Length: 239
Image (cartoon, rainbow, N blue to C red; front, side, top):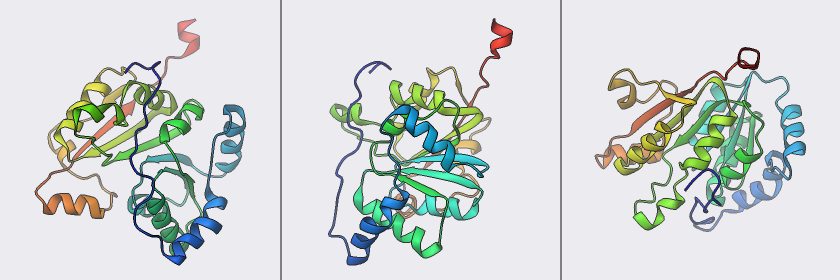
């Protein structure tokens, strides 16, 4: 897939087990107050600028699962505005419960495909982006569904601020190889690893989610890839 090809759906099912009464109530009453949707680029950029006013930065988590890491980071960094993207309704309901229980005020939710919001995001708007244990889509015929692809990598390079970071974690060897291949073709993003420990060790401040704990129990080691957004060229120097 090239940057200009139509993108494929990159997520699977939208809903799992039956929701509890509390979860249904959160989706009906709390989600509308936190949901963000980009109807058009100009309007989205304006609303985003207004919403992030007063915050030190904007961080994006792509596919937050049940929201464990997103809620923990938001609690630790209450001066940062977070946008979490997740199409899975049960995962959204789980995050909403954490937001209500902890009284978190710095999380917005995009209940859909993160590629849509990246397409509308202003350039250099994000200081940190996270893609944590994405669905590896292991069957070759499903590789087109993998979130990391030329189009999304280009979008991330455009939307991450100079010296900002992209964090990717996976316990699937094929997906990690795929990721390094695609990121290696993006000159704006630089892999920061200087030794094996840099990609073997879970970064400080990252909670051990249930998925990551299960992977460790089953003998699957997670790898952590960090990429820095190289500074953009100064127009005055290139004119």
